[in-house]
Length: 186
Image 1 (tube, helix red, strand yellow):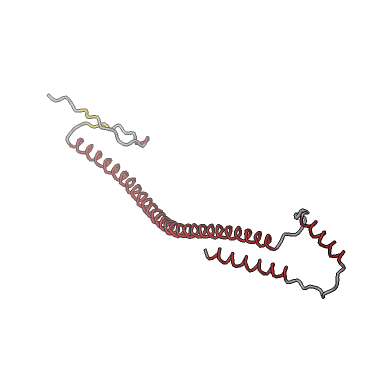
Image 2: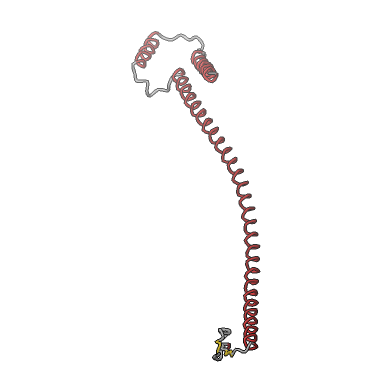
């Protein structure tokens, strides 16, 4: 509303200046003009009225109106650009907030990934230790079973049984089950 008042005041001021400049022409000193020259000037003035004005420069009022229209148009464009600028600034602020939030989430995710990576490394070490223990335990179990079978063979021999061992030790298969040949008892 204030802009329109300023616009109107500016237009009035400009039109006043233009009109006052047009009417405040200095008149030459009073000279006597012969009557036939005066009549000729009047005829020229009347003729000029009916000629097309498109070739002439616009009058002060027309210029003021044109300038006021142009000013109003530029004012509207400036208001639209200002509104667009405010919208862009709001979006920029929103994007900055999203960036800050996403950066914190990214840092948290990186921290969690590092912790998970450390945990996986630790679990792999423990798995390798467990695997080593199992393999070692398996070897111990084989040795214990071999010892038990040898002890069993000795016990059977002491009890008087005839034991034949079919071994496949050259094939690394381990001892096979003994076959017991007991003499026929009466």
